[in-house]
Image 1: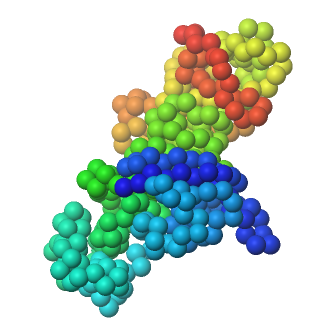
Image 2 (image 1 turned 90 degrees about the horizontal axis):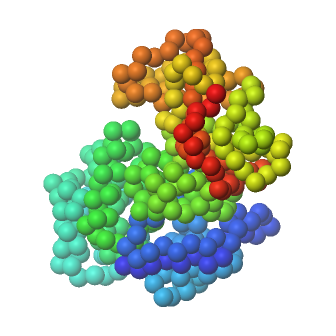
Image 3 (image 1 turned 180 degrees about the vertical axis):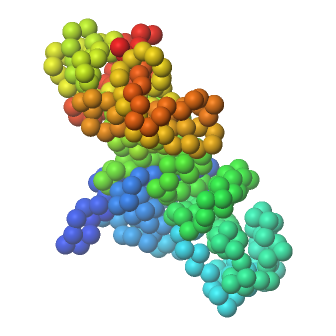
Length: 362
């Protein structure tokens, strides 16, 4: 096992743009760290620099206690599992999993023992004599992970390994990966654009955007205390609702002259943005008037999308499955309590302090 330290890590392509802008990140020994963000945000490039598949343009990468900027990939003590399974079709599962050790001229008995140990952990012992064409997608991914396990790396690197699987298999493999981390207790770095994977797998999450890290923290901390508009809008399904507002008197003025009892030490007229999660908006007889666009029925919950005068984007309201859904096109009232709100300034960063009261928006 090993800890990782990224110190001002930078990537600039020759005669091209800088895509990673001085990242600083400490990944603890034995931690499951998830890199999450939209396509093109730099998470995979950072992972490939850790793996040694991309040159480092600036800063330091430390694995354990060694600076590995110029250390070849094969000598970094890392193993990478890719989005594609990359299995040799003419080899059996046993041969695929042991290929790296055989290439390193490990004794045959050691290779066999390592393969069987990994197969036991992944529950694929009964598949060892099959070839990849006889395996399902989930089984092939297990083989790819097993090939990494037999190397006994200090660090596992996963590059969107579940994106080629269907929804049910992704859920199953998420559980398997969580169990694998618990059993091996090895440092793991996992790249995904799927926030559900990030929230369920990671001990901590690093949210990437434009080649920078916006925020690092536990899944619950990022969900409940986002540092800025980007993190608030990226994590959560449906995403956080954003309501344009401005400072007015002893509170904030929203659409249709509605007021929210949140006090900020700013001049009247200063624009801010109110953020509120769909589950924190109440639907009832008091509050701000809204027109229902559509209601999605998701089995255990319902999502009502409503439009409020002077607010461009529809607001998502999460309702219990037993709640009588409002009719499409009907007018409803939505209520927001200040204690559930996040306030973001003109720079997009969260603002504190916020006055917490029980009064609803009216």
